[in-house]
Structures are given as structure tokens and as C-alpha cells.
Image (cartoon, rainbow, N blue to C red; front, side):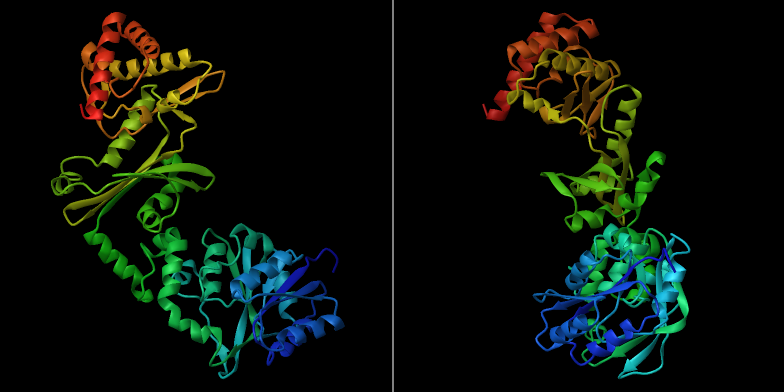
Length: 494
């Protein structure tokens, strides 16, 4: 029996004096030799804590803790955080397990790292009798209903991976937890023998939780949008068994285009549910105006998502029928820039949606830029290699113009740069507004109008830009200064 893992049996307790002794007796009768019991009293107002402490005095395998009443999720999380076992078995304080359950569950789970959960067959106890018939496990069914009890064996590492039980959800917390652990894969094995006796009481949590159905579904949709998108084609609906059909009907009237670069196919599920993330306020807001920028960390990648504002009525008809959306153009122009050797954050994909014939919303996704500064920062910082940085900006602008690319929002906030000592990097962002064609000296110099500069800085820009494009430096300087001054007066209202 050497080398077997320690199992931590966690029992959250709230006012269970009538049943706790029976539960503890069943746990202590387990024929598996390596286990500890952690009883977490959640502010009971009866004698539950005293009963638990009396058991702990007789059996050193039992450890008892108490806290102010915070709910079953907080109690279970704290108990597991104190657990020393590699494996976790939650047991409710009014239920009973058989002596063989722990041993047989461990024998199964240690066979295969891909086995995430070992669950028991169960009989009812108390106000109901007979076997609790639960269907065979499938992710698709788990998306529509809770098909496992809390009492099932799993690894503490998986609890840590999903950051424990969700304290936001105040009912069916085990459903949320099983989705968290299993949505990315893993096997569930049900033991063939009845190993759990589940007590049914008029005041039991499973009965009272039924009144919180809408709350449960709202929280599940907020926490697992990609899972429901994959399994149900959209959110879990209040009519749960009708979810797939309702989502199919919704998609007929709300068509969408989801495009993700082949190299980032693993991010497609993320892109599909961007409307849900923005609706729920997920991600870090880095800009909010007519459009909105948010930063996300997903599957080890730092992403920036731009949500474009809803266009006016005419453009709601035009976009998608006669013209690409701003999100699609942002992606395509970023690809074009990179192929031309012009820096811009790596594009990932885009999402667009229509309601009938009317365009409604779009999102553009790219990797977060590694450039920490924008052109605006010249007002704040004195960069040691400012001359080289201005030359690099002029070179990037000249390359754009030589290719016939005119950025129509070429402003100080849309020019990013980094200075890594070995290399200065320039990246251009916000590419959805572009025009194409021959760019002569006057048009090229006018493109600098939203880059406020001192005469010294402008000399650097004008000289390098003129050199690369074969123009006269003095004329470029004069034109750039003229257009910059005009733009500043316009913005000042003069």
C-alpha cells in the first residue's frame, strides 16, 4: 500500500448538528489508509462545531476550523487551501459514504492522469428513497444540467488550476465547478457500486437552490461563455433543454462572421464570445470613447480587442453588403502592413454581426504591442536616442507612403515605439481608416499634421523623410510646419 496518495476529505458545516456525527462516522469507517478530514464550520449557530471538536479529540485524522458564515463555496475553498492531500473528496455534512468508496475511487484516478473526476452511484436518504439515477457523463449534457453531485474525487491541482469554487454563485456551485474542471477535457469515471447516500430534506440546499435558477444560469453564462458557445451554439437559456434550438434561431436572424488567423486557431472560441465579454465588462479597459479598447490575457497571450461603435443607419446597411466592416479592414490592413515590412501589432482576427440586414457590431483582435511608448510621450520624457527614434518614425512613414498607404488617422497616439538599445521598433495602430494611391510631397507632408513637434524634432522628421523620398528637405519642413500649425489652430478653435 506504500506510495498511495493522501486524500483530504473536506466537510463544510453549517447548522448540521442532527446529521454531522453520522457523516463523520461514515468517513472514519473508510478502509483506505491514507486520509485526513478537514471540517470547516461556517459560523454554525447550533452545536455542530462542538460535535466536530469532540470527534477531533478522539481521532487525530480530523482537523476542525471555523469561520464567520460566508457560504459553502468559501468554506470549501478554505478547507481545501488547508488540505495536505494530493486528492480531494468533498462530503456534505448530512450525507454518508460507504467504507469502500475512497479506496475504489483512488484506485481508479491514479491509473490515468487524464481521469479528472471519479464519482459514485448514489441512493437517496431521508425524505426520499431509491437510487438517484444520473445520466452518463457528457460535456454536452453538462452544459444543460448538473449531472454530478459535489461528492466526487478529484486532484487538488485541478482545484488550484480553476481557482477553486466560485463564491459569486450562491446555488449549484458544484455545477459551475465541474464545468470549470472539465470544459477543456478530461475523463469522468463513475464507480459501478452505490457509494454515496444523499440526504433529501425539505430545507436541503438542492431543494432551495431551485428558486435561484435564473441567478445560476446568469452566472454560468458569465463565467463560461466559450463552453456554452461550443456545446450549445450560444448561451445557456432559462429554458435549458431548448438552448440549442433557441440559439440556432437567434443565429438565423443575427448572422455573424468570425475569422481567426490559422496560426491562432486556438483563440477562435475566444473571438466567438467577444460580445459576451464586453457585455459583462470583462477585460481591462484601456480606452473608452466612441470605440472601446480592452486588454485580455487568454491562453498565455496578451490580447487587445477593439470594439467599434454601432454605425449610423446608412452604414448599418452598407457594412457587410457593400463594404467591409472596420474590424475586417483593421485585420486586412494590418496583414498588408506586415507583408510590406511596416510594424503593427500581430493581427489575430475579427468578429462582425448583423441583425437582419442591419450591421450591428464588430471587434478587432490583435496581440498586445510590445512598444511601451507613443509619440505623445515625447512631451513627457527625454529619450536618450530621440534622434534615432524620430528618424525611425520618418522612415516608417516614408515606407507607408512609398507603398501608397495613407493613414487617415495618423496621430500621436497611433504611433508606438520601443527602444531596446539594440533596436528601435515602430508600430502603427488604428488602421481601419486608410486610403490608397500615389502620395506626392504635399499630401505626404500633410499626413504629419497631427504630430506636434518642436522645430528641432520636425527638422529630424523632415530631413529623413525627404531623403528617403527624394524631396527637398527645406520644402518638406515648411509644409509639415504649415500643416501642423493649421491643425493646432483648428483644434484650439481659432
